[in-house]
Length: 386
Image 1 (tube, one colour):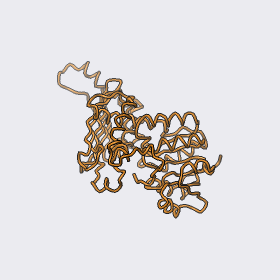
Image 2: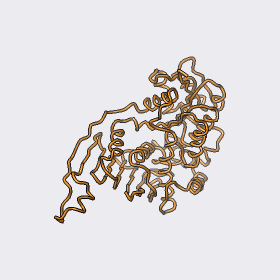
Image 3: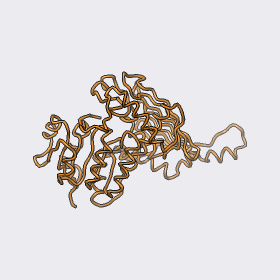
Image 4: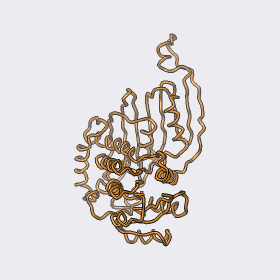
């Protein structure tokens, strides 16, 4: 195979972005061959942006059986990512899914299993992994520059949204339409970066505010405390109801700390590791000598185009992915654990009890203002913007 023929499922907000760079030829070895949307109006609008040779479909199954693509990019509302990916794998297609991997871990696990059975290339659109500061932060942590991690603090309160944002679509901020709020919509990238850089915690205790700042039924405020296997702890705080907001990731270790904030990456390095200093210092008051370093990194990154390039290259050459699809379950584990902890008013272990989470989610879907489970719908509304 010299060229990967790509079909795009969902031509709304993110879908139109994928159409743009693919039709401009910005991904070597890729050709946009088909588009799919259940909305005739949305599909007609998308058709004006693609060439004459691009096929269009109103049903994903018709696209899968048409034998006109080698791979698909899924850019639909969250609930449909796993079922569409599973169908695509069953038709021997490679898959790239938009974030999040899914709404609940059961469906994401089933998607991962289908990917494994197919042997095809499965990627997730974690475009934030391409940014230079994130890659440098991961490199420093993995190199042992900080020693053993003691604490992680991730504050993301810069996701402010007005009520009009939530009122822009009936499916928005509902359990049946989106399956969650700030954790499912705004924070999948943050959750992914947190675990990608720092590793997965073993248990969570979270406090979520549901409609705390907006007239919505899902969470718009989250404060979560986590524990790691080595005894380290962490805090994850996010909201769509505060302005001005802050985005700051601080990672403390035995040898110092790293802070990412305002486009800067700063390392404070202990001349003597803190645990050694604690054992050996005889002067009572005192602390290790510390050096402050501004860490250089390559600015920017190719984001969505870069992840798609990486995926296409993996299909053509077999190279390992920067953002493997199977890793998408980690962020879903974290968001499910935070919500379940808040619902049950208790600690939740990771991996989360997927049956218990699904049971609680179904109760909320039943009472949702949308009042239907999109994962069971035969009519897929894939026109939403994210």
